[in-house]
Amino acid sequence: MPLIRAEHLVKEYRRPRQHSGRFFGVRTLFTRESVVTRAVEDISIFNEGEVVGYLGPNGAGKSTTIKMLAGILVPTNGSCEVAGIVPWENRSANAMNIGVVFGQRSQLWWDLPLDESLHLIGKMYRMEPERFRRQREMLVDLLDMQPFLQTPVRQLSLGQRMSGDLAAAVLYEPPVLFLDEPTVGLDVIAKERMRSFVEQINRDNRTTVLLTTHDLDDVERLCKRIIIIDEGRVLFDGRAADLKRRYAPHRLLDVVVAGDATERLETVANTLPHGAQSVSLDGMKATFEIDPEIIRVADVIADVSSRVPVIDLGVRESPLEGIIREIYEAREVTR
Amino acid sequence: MIAPVSWRLHPGLIACTMAAIRRTWAYRIRFVLWVVRMIAQLYLLRMIWMALYAGHDVVDGIPANMMVVYLTVAMLQEFLIQPLIVFEIEQRIMRGTVASDIVRPVGFMQQMLAYDLGGILGRVPVLLVAIPLSMVVGWLRLPPTPAAAAGYAVSLVLAYLISLMIWLVVGMGGFWMTSTQGLRFLLSTIQSFLAGAVVPLWFLPDVLRTVLQLLPFQGMAFLPLSIFVGQATGIDILVALGIQLFWVVVLALMAAFVWRRAQWKLVVQGG
Image (cartoon, rainbow over all chains, first blue to last red):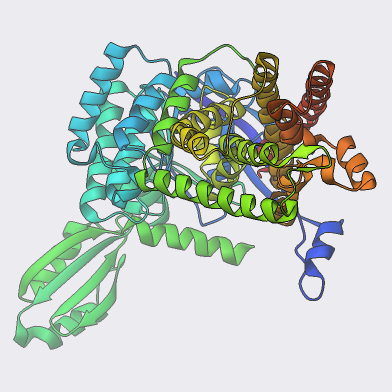
């Protein structure tokens, strides 16, 4: 069942051009020139229970899309529905259906203990006391919040604060969760806690999650579907596995040979079968890139190990990070 | 597009007010500092005015002790109804948390008003110390008549609304004017004077007094204080309340207009 439907969403930003030099303030105030920025989301349908990774370079329009879906921004053009509601037309009804985490900006009350923020949010979303108690207990448990539940938010570490923000966003069990860079600045443990938490609520509640991030580990771990946008254009929309197959079908074969076979390894590297090529060669170690469309990885391994005494070998996929970088860079060139 | 303001009491709003009260109490030491600052200010103002009276008991028909009461109440009520909501809103816009506030099932402005109310209730304990203290040292006495007391109570509420609306109009200008800081700084410096909280309008030159009487600021201090000290009596009390009410209505319309523009700016243009 489609839970979010966004069609031809266009947001044009018009900002007065900032002047510099003498009297720049006054000139900015009276200027008629403006700079128009476009953020577009062509067509997107998110189904119930999907976790979608929303990628794009800084300023690609990711946050703008989230803000439109959350009802904070009204699009210049196009339409969208979240759980059957047009967000900006019925903001408070939409609010009941969505949870939002802006990684850089806390929604918690700075001067108050974390627990009070949770209570306040429970009241705002009209939660029954019994349901609130149950949810709060579950979240405190799941996110290990007991030790800092009574600490004022301003004294929390970033990781603790993020746990609090996540708890605040899912407390009232919204069917849709928007996470805008939720792991930015977190340490490894806090990132892991965040990821397994998102995994769990997606599994248990079938919560639909839209995640923007620059951390591709988040995406690899959580998202089956990836959308890459830039300047409002959708560069890719599909499964993470397809992304790899399309943009980086290559496998990487790492080979380590015995110390006396380095010369023979060099020969092998220069005479690899069609479909394989050497990408790095460093003494006893070499890395070969294999195109599985042309030759099977197993055949290359057989060929190499028949010609040099192999001590160790391993097969890798190209990391997602490299792929995304390539896509961004390709875009730079075509522009 | 924009939900109409609904005044149905939402449990979330009560929770906002309670949270604001607790937040006011979060920093205990601030309470002590507030009381100390208030006493110090009162003491200095009283010194200045006693010097101005220069040994006379009555100047322009205003007895010296009435003047002291006037200044004391001016300070106490200014402390109570100060428009901290504007700084709250500004802070939320600057920190960007305004996005989270807007994505609530409760309207943004209702949330802010609920916080402001909580702030006022939270400051009441300071007055519970300051009022008895100023009565003991003789700087404060009760209104002369029950009519003055009742009139003042109503007038104080109207004074709060006037100050709230003025500051909302100025503060929300920040949504689309790059910065209203200059205007705000100017206003915060001279508002006490414009309101007649430093020098009662009686003592001002005719021209200045006439100008100030045409502006809404006198409703923030001068009008309620004249009622409190018994300088405005009988029909004058009703006239004062009428003037205040007039300004509440005018300023509320302005604030609503500004808020609609601000909200439009925020949601349509991205703030």
